[in-house]
Structure formats: C-alpha cells, structure tokens
Image (cartoon, rainbow, N blue to C red; front, side, top):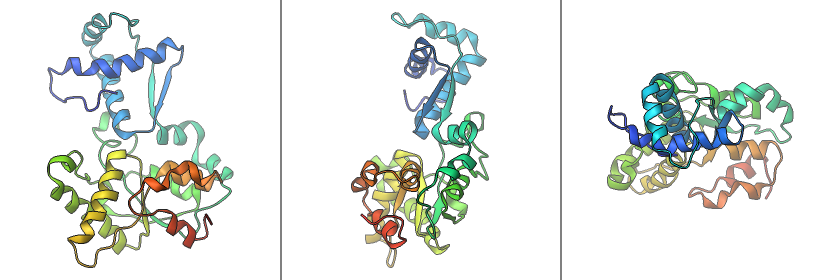
Amino acid sequence: CGVVSSLSDDDLMRHLAPLRNLIHVEDQKENKLVTLCDMCCNTLKQTNLRIKEKKDDLETLNLFMDRENDYKGTVKIYHFLEFLRDEIGFDYIKKLVKNPLKNMKIMPYYGCMMLRPREVAIDDAEEPTILSDLLNSLGAEVIDNPFKIECCGSYHTIENKDIVRNRSYRITNYATSRGAEAMVLSCPLCKFNLDFRGKEAEKIYQGYKQIPIYYYTQLIAIALGLDQEICNFDEHIVDPTLLLKKKGVCTE
C-alpha cells in the first residue's frame, strides 16, 4: 500500500505505490476498494484525496506509470468496518448472529490511523462509536475507556520498546480497572503492541495482568458461528480462547 506516506509537501513519489493499487482496481472495472488494515486504508485514502484535490500531482504521477493505465480517480476506498456500517449495516449483522458474545465485557480500542487525519477518518476523531456499535450488534457488553483513541506507540516498538510497554500498560490497565475483560481493535501494529508488549509489561508493573486482545474480524467470525480455526488464535500472546470458553461462547 506504500505505508506510511510522508506528510511533507515534497513526498509525491511516495504516492506511487498506493496509486498503482488504485489503478488496478479501475483496470478490473471496479469502483470500490475495501481494506482490513487501518494503515492501508489511511495511506490509500490520503493518496486518493491528494490526487483528487491536486490534478497536477495526478498528471505527474501518471507519467511515472509506464506499464499502467492512467488513474481516473473513480475509486472509493472503504475500511472494512466502514463498509460493514455504511453498505451492510450493523442491524443486519445483528440478525445474522448465531452465537452472541453474551456477558463478554470488551473495550474497543481505536488508536490513531482510522481517526486521523480528520479528512480520511472513518469516524469521529474524539468520540468514535463504530467498534462499539459493532460489539453491540454481536451481543457484547461495551466498556468505554478515555484511552481508546490514544496512540499505542506505533513503530517505536522497534527502537524504543520501553515507550510502547508503558503505553500498552497504561491503555490496557485502565481498561481492566473499568471492568473490561478483553479489548478489540482493527490495526495489526496496535495488536502486536498491546498483546506482545503488554505481556512484557507484566514483568515490570507489579500486580498487572494482561487481558486478551481480539481483532474485530475474529469476534465477527465467532458470533456468526464460523469455525474457530479460521481465527488463528494460536498466533496471540495472551490466549483469547480462555475468555470465550469461560463465557460459554465457544467450547473448543
């Protein structure tokens, strides 16, 4: 996708990779692109927005595409959550639920990339509800947390792990103090930081116990009665299946 595009004014060439993906969509005679990843969505939307607002930039970028057709600017980009909300509807999803997430107290975590900058956000940057609305449709009990829109530490996880451990602890510990038994998110990097670095934080902060971190797609799969094996729970650091079994949501 070209993640992450520079926010400086002279970053035009950094938009080549996302633009190439948008061209491929048009080549397939489609006008919608759905992505699961917050960062991919953010990058693609920022590129799409820039070239629609600055036609000269689009002309310049098209000149660098020797083997591709020119981009016409017809593609609309959706985050999968956004697509579920706007094109399918959470009320409809609620009707499909076979295995409600009853009695599961879950805190939604949004992080940065789906909410900032405002021009490409899929929800309100200060008071987002899209994950809460999804959880409600799946039958879970939503636990709010003022840290739900705070940054997890992002790429600092490579060069400054202490910062990320501290932020992961701060976010998840407050969730636990509010009664949350788990968290749900949509960003792969946020998941790594909160799950992996959060588990490391147990060795630093006395009495702290990490809670399971779910992808929203995993909870959708469980609630719709799909096979648990497709969720790849074995790739998590904190076992997400224990809570599901405790609540009687799954028995495997």
